[in-house]
Image 1 (cartoon, one colour):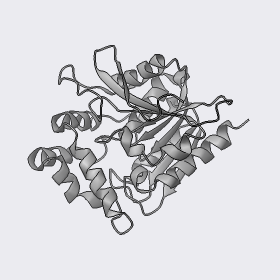
Image 2: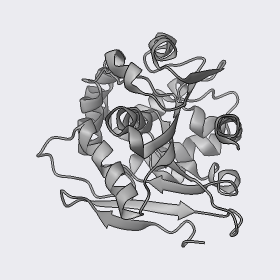
Image 3: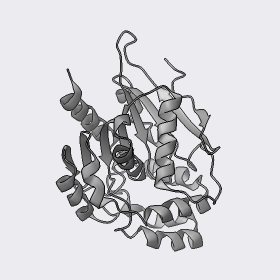
Length: 274
């Protein structure tokens, strides 16, 4: 077992320290695949805390803090952040750990990285499991968030719009506070750059280049751009399975982690069992 849950770092080719951790509670005599979990914007690897216990009995679970998030270093404003650089960070992490390929779960913006990895480095990804993740943020209201965040601060903005992310009638108030506290640890200027870049992106026309088995999980009451943005994914990605979590807004990975994990395991069992 490799220092389970302990954050480690590596330095990228452009000199940024990236944090990651590995949880592996698979049977030692079996060869286990690696499953990489990539979090959403404003999050970090810790937000997958509820996913790890069950997943790590079946897979070597690798969680990475995207650059500028969690324990990873905040990069300078120049050169400008790009999705290609975020993908390269992920490839360099695989290289660092001697992994030719892995399964990938991507939540929201983490799924943007997964989709672009699948398109640009198909040999490095065995499957893509996308939760609340559309082909970019261009066709959403996300650009309108940025001036509000700049004026009010990240925590206040998120607290005022929290019902866009959670069904408060079904959510433990402690989870909401945990979410807000976690998000508030981010560097606000960097988050502005990160989300600002994502709002310029739409790769809908290239989704056909995703050739690996893909699970698409849509929040049935999606509040970031609406459910229509998922239609093109269902119609264009050649090998996909689709699930809708009816009645739930955007933050499904936080709100119903056990359901997410069960669907991850079921999909991988169907598609990759011997």
